[in-house]
Amino acid sequence: MHKTSSRLLALLSLLQTHRDWSGEDLAGRLDITSRTVRRDIDRLRELGYRITTVKGPAGGYRLDAGTHMPPMLFDDGQAVALAVALQTSAADATVAEDATRALATLRQVMPSRLRHRIDLLRITAVPPPVARDAPQVDTHVLVELSRAIHAREELRFDYTLGPSTSVDDLRRVEPHHLVTRLNRWYLVAWDLDREDWRTFRVDRIRPRTPTGPRFTPRELPGGSVSAFITGRFRGNDGATTDWPCQGEVVLHLPAVEIAPFAQDGIVEELGPHHCRLTLGSWSWTGLAAAIGRFDTEIEVIGPPQLATACADLAARYARAARAAGPE
Image (cartoon, rainbow, N blue to C red; front, side, top):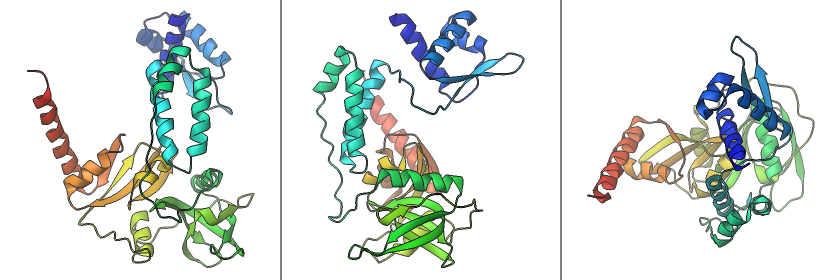
C-alpha cells in the first residue's frame, strides 16, 4: 500500500507541472506499465482530481482545476515544510487566523510520526516594525479586488472617506493594480465619475455586487506602478524612496506573503503565486542580498546593474561554500 501511495504521489507531481503527458511518457518516468498508469489515473480521479484525457495520435493526460479542493498528497518533507510555512505566516495579521486553522487541519490528518515532529516545532515569527495604526485588511476583499482586476471588470464599492467619519462614498472604477506599501494595501484605479486616476485604501473598501462590464486597460501615468505610487506618496508619509540603487524583480510568491517583509518597497500582485517587488538600497550588492532573503525564485526585470550584482553575489557565495567544504 505504501508503494502504491508513493507512486500516486509521484504521478500527481508530474501532472502538476502544467503540461500534457502521454501515457507512455508517464510510464517511462515512473518505471511502470501503461496499464498501471491508467489504473493510477482512475484512482486519482476517484480522490477528486480532475484529470482530463487529451485527444491526439498518442493521447495523454492533463490535470485541470476543479470546483473544490481534493485531498492533498504530500510526502514527509513537503508536510513538514508546509507546517513551518504556516507557523511563520502567523506574523502576518492578514492571514494569521487562516494559517492557524490550516495548520490545525494539517496536523489532524498527519500520521503520528509526522505529528510528533510538527509538535516539536516551536517557531515564533517576529513581524517587522509597523505603524501603530496599520489597518487590518479583509482577505475576502483582497480576493474580490484581485478577481475584478484580472477579469478587467468595472467595480462598484462603498468607500469610507476617513477614520473619523462614518460617511461612505459610492465609487465606480476600473480597477488596475493591487499594491502594498509600508504595510498598507492600495487599489490603483481609474475613477469613472471623476475621470482621473485614484488610489484607495483597501481597508476602507466594501465591494458591491455584481461587478460591471469589462473594460480595456488604460496606460498608467509614469509608465509603471512603482513610479505612479512613488509620485503619489512622495513626502506624504515621511518615508523616502530616493535610494541611489533601485530595481524591480518578479518573485514566485503571493504578494500577501511578501508584503509584511518588504519594508518601504512596493509590492504589486501579478497573480495568486507571483508578485512584482520594487525595492531600493544603498548599493547594488546590498539590493541583491535584500531580494535574496525572500527564499524563492527571482526574475530580474531591471536595471542591468541589479542582474550583474545578483551574478556577482552568487559567485561570491559559491566561492565561500567551496572554501568551507571538506578538503
